Structures are given as structure tokens and as C-alpha cells.
Amino acid sequence: MGIITEKDFIERIKNFDEYAFKAGERADKSVLDSHDFRYVKSGQFKANLHVHTQYSDGEMSIKELLDLSEDIAKTNPEFITAITDHDTIDGDKEASKFIENYTYANICLGVEFSTIAINFPKQPKPLQVHLLVYGINPNDNKLDNYLKTKREQKLKLAKATVAELDKALPEYNFSLEEAAKCHGMVLKGEDEVAHPLKKYTSGKILLDYYMPNADFSYEKPIYKFKYLFKGKEPYHITYKKALEMYIGEELPPIPDNIEQKIQIAREIYLKAHPSIGNMLEQFSSFEDTVKFVSTLDSGVMSIAHPARTKAYCPEFYDYLFEHFKSSGGEKAMFYEGYYQSYEGEYFQKWQKAIDKSAAKFGLLKTGGLDSHGKSLVVRCPRKDRA
Image 1 (cartoon, rainbow, N blue to C red):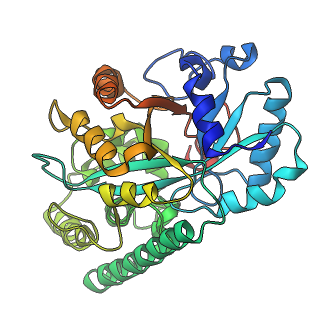
Image 2 (image 1 turned 180 degrees about the horizontal axis):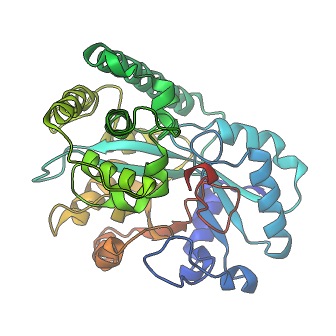
């Protein structure tokens, strides 16, 4: 009971099977949170190793997380909850202060690093790779300072980019606070800069053109029809479709002058993202981050939701795990092979290839629901994003 150390984490996870990470079986494999709760009820569900709180992009307070963990562990004493906020260990610090008030909860202190990979063979464009770290020391100044520095640098970059957008397209009064409506972490210096600004500028420019007096904000169609944005077409084209569905009517084609404004914005925000051969200092490179974590006194690593980092060639997952292992050594032990919150069919296509590649490097599986709401047994997207 209490805080799960790195050593305890390794020993426990080695003995967990697939069902230890599953709350239940999905009614539809491609539909998120369509699962029943048979493994919760049977006690086979033993770990949710991917949980976000209010310190990053989740709804849960640390107290709520501890309370929920306590409730589950009362009847399922092996159950482990891992705190894995994006690019911050502030939630871990709070949990470590209050865990003594709980009798049954098993808490693993962790973090999810946002990293960018640009060094894989034949890589055509930068790739986002998230790195989960388990069993950290919440009082590790080396880790805390690294994360704080990156957040501060990224927030400064985001502010500068919005200022440049506002200068180039002053009629839209762009602001970072408004951008955060579709991607709250941009206001905290967590995760990315270009991606949320792509959503923001596309949505704001198009909504202003089609519905200048709209009684709703630009992010509403994005959250209402989130599934539309999984394809490969340009983001603003998909946004127009989402807007049409949101208002229930077809809109005329996007005129050239609006396309030009979207392109001007794109050229600006893309400068705030690494490119092949150009890693910006504000971001954490994949290999450098893995090497950094390997130097910490405490913490073992797992590649988060590997199928979300989409393969650009058949050998991609070999490259991913090879770089992981060569950079992290003994600390690079796991991959999230039992991730429970993939959407669509892509992950079903690649899961066997991922497992095969991971086996070549002796990696063990972790798993989690990537919970963002106020539950530990579903992903539970934020209510304001429904």
C-alpha cells in the first residue's frame, strides 16, 4: 500500500497479463469507451498505468484520484494507479504528501514526456513519441528542473508565435487564451505548439468567415465531431465538414482569399515545430529524453501508445524500439502494448507488428486507459469536449 517504488513496479508488472490492464471487453473494437466492466467486477483488472489530472489535461484532482484508487483497492488490493501527467510532476508531489491518509491505495508516481523524433532511418517528417516514466522521485530536482525549463521555453515560443500570427492577420485578434479552448496544454507549455495553433487558426478563420455572428466558439465543432479529424486531408477542410455538421447545413466552398489566410497562418505556426534536421531547443528530442531519464536515480520507461506514432515504413517499429533501447539501456524496459484507448482500426492493423518488434528488444508490456475524466475505469473524455 502507498507509493509503488521503481523496484516494486517492475516486479508487479512482470506478472500482469492482458486482463490486468483491461476494465472490460468493447462492444465495438473501434469505438472508445464501449467496453463493459467484467474485469473490474471479477477483480482481474489490476492497473491503470496512464492517468491524467488537472495538472495537465485531465479533469481529476489529485484528491479525487486518490479517493478513487482507495475505493478500488479496498476490494482489489493489487490495483495500481499511475499518475502520468504531461511534462509535469507537480501532481506527483501533491500525491506524495497526502498518500499517508489512505489505507489501501497503491500509487505509482510517473510522468508522460512529450518528445519529438527526427532521427529514424528514411524518416519523412517529425514524429511525436510520448514516453511514460514510472517510479519517479517527486523530489528529484534534476527531473523537475528539466520539465520546468522545457515548459517555460515552450510557453514562450507559443506566445511569440501567437504574437506573430496576430501581426500578420490582425483582423482576428488571436490570443493564446482562446487557442487553449481547443488544446488547454498550450497555455501551460505542455505538449506541442504548432498542432494546437493549427486547430485554432483553421477554426477561427473559417468560423469568422462563414458565421461572423456565431453564438458558439470555434472549438465546439472540433469536440462535437472529433472522429472526423482522424483522416489525412488538410485540417481546415475537415473543420469545414465538422462546422457543416454542427450547424446542419452545407456551406459554400472556401474562397481563395480565406485559403490564403489559412496558409499564411500555417507558414507561421510551422516554424514553431521541429523539422527533419532541425530540433528546436524548446522541444525534447526522443533519444535525448530517453538518455536523460536513464541518468535519473529512479524511473523506468515505457513507450506510450506506440500505434499512435504511425509507421511510415514496414520496419518503423524496429527503428522505434531500437533507438529506445540503445538510448535508454536497462531503464528502457517497457512499451504500452496493452494500451486501452485506441480509436478506429489502425491499431488493430499494426498491433501484431508492434509486439513482434518489441519482442526483438526484450521489452515488456504495460497498459492503461489514458484516463482524462473523473473515472479510473474509462478514458472518459472531458465533458466540455462532448
